[in-house]
Length: 249
Ligand code: IPE
Ligand code: IPE
Ligand code: MG
Image (cartoon, rainbow, N blue to C red; front, side, top):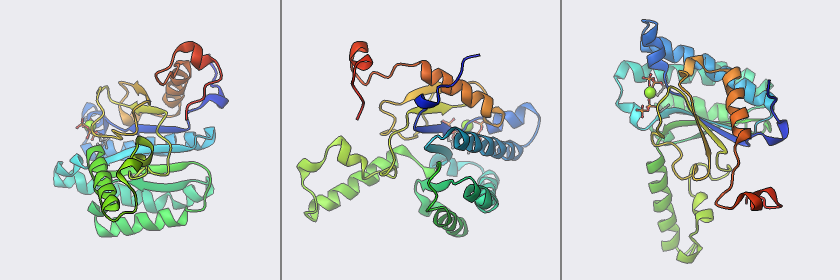
């Protein structure tokens, strides 16, 4: 069996956790059961990333568009989020994990937002894995919000128009302190991005699997990492440049 090269791991993994509903449907269970099982997969993947020494794991947990699902399903997803944020506190602290969240967080029900803030605050000083939850997240909204902020600062004279570059613009996004994902995984067989990290994935390696999210775990994460390690990231350059001394910014 191929072995993982622990020196060539992605710094930042992002995952579109899709397929909970279909997993449940295949088993003649309610969609809610699928989400509950999906939470178990979250725990396993977070633990594995921690063990491997991955620096950042961004999980697409709830999109801006997901608010339009049936009310009972949205309520259940919020309930699960709340449970996770409270019940996992001890685990996060023990495993040296720092929680972060991106998205239009003010859309969340107030009690959940408060709990989220508390958990983020409690883990603020941890320096292991950064677990970055995308909640009420939409890539286009994020970019538009960034543009608004940057216009405001230009108008106030804090920065000039010429200061706006791809690098500076990145600092106006929710992910301002984080490097772009090296690897993006989507489960459930859908071959689309669904408004996730549109700006940040310009040079991310994409990995799609038919596995439904509740069935995803340590083993398949390692498969994805092995596949990542077989890829050559060229960033627009040639192979010989890449094999030489070039290091991406
Ligand atoms: C992913 O599973 C969870 C969320 C989007 C919150 P889905 O609920 O989208 O499952 P499918 O795609 O209907 O199978
Ligand atoms: C993407 O899954 C959002 C999350 C995983 C949270 P969806 O199930 O909402 O995406 P579409 O609707 O199939 O594109
Ligand atoms: Mg889906």
